[in-house]
Length: 471
Image 1 (cartoon, helix red, strand yellow):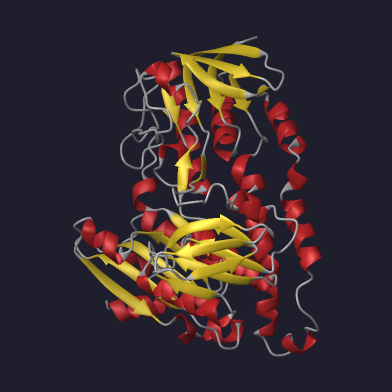
Image 2: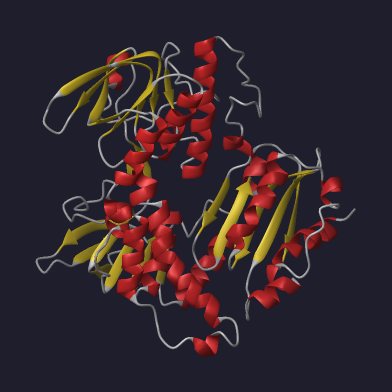
């Protein structure tokens, strides 16, 4: 069988979720994957990176609590950390994910998928065999993104690490240089410094500069306390891989940075270079622009794109959110059912613009949702910003000795609802969903007074922020 209602190109979390929604809706679907089923998140991003980071976080947590601190007798077991990382990456074997596809009734076509015409996808297998698939209703592109390697002199010839090589590293380099100051750069600086690397971070634009200003400041100080050389404003002018295998980075001011490995973490590029977009009037290598139901602009209604490839939000959980919407809307359109694409409707990915949660697993952790104060002002909102020292809650003192943290609430003064929320501190990741509900649900400030935080928890910060805001 080569005819399906829907064809999904890309079997990462986004493609899997989209295909699952299509099947649950009663349509047939095939999924195409050229690498491992489960995608970037399962093998080279979310899961293995957090496994790398978690052991160090647990050790730090123990050392911050008297009684537990005295029981800690050594440093991290690097080999054990890497073994745990490998386990969470399923040892780069996708048998489990393939079994799930089979159980869900989703046929898998292994190979490189290219769109050859409207609703037609050609899959080239490892042996060169071409299989032609035809979709009756829709094709979903869920091919994700790859690491961006900029045009710095000598960089490509030096064979730098990207996020993939870093996450899958079998050995910890004695010296690691990082070009970038964003999420990947900050998390890997945290991970490899705690694993024993001497880390130099070349953060031209600052550390986590897309977050609230205090976020980058706190993370930079923490990294420096751990021995990381954080070079704000430093820019790589050229790179050379030396005869002994080491790497030399020459900065634009002439200074040289020497390292055993170099990680480039400055952004992402869409995996659309060899997708056949030229066959349907689109530009190869470009991001795919979509509406709120993930339907691609410039194509006659049958092509959809979900996840990183549409550049709305480059986060796995948000891509899966889009996937659920796109799977459901394709089913609705195929069956002639009503489409609910109004803001916050079943078939609209409204949260992409208004209520995106994100966690950065540095030390301290960063958890945020919605708009920063600067972004809210850019959007033309009349806002009030309320800040509170997270360490001033009773729960934080119990949680860890020397707890350092901060909380910020951004309120739309015209509607009296929260539009942004940021937490910095140990283990704040597990606190962010309450703020996500408040932002997505547009819960009025007056009603939030009745959501009483349990005592003594760090979540008492909600009460303190509301008190600072005033009734």
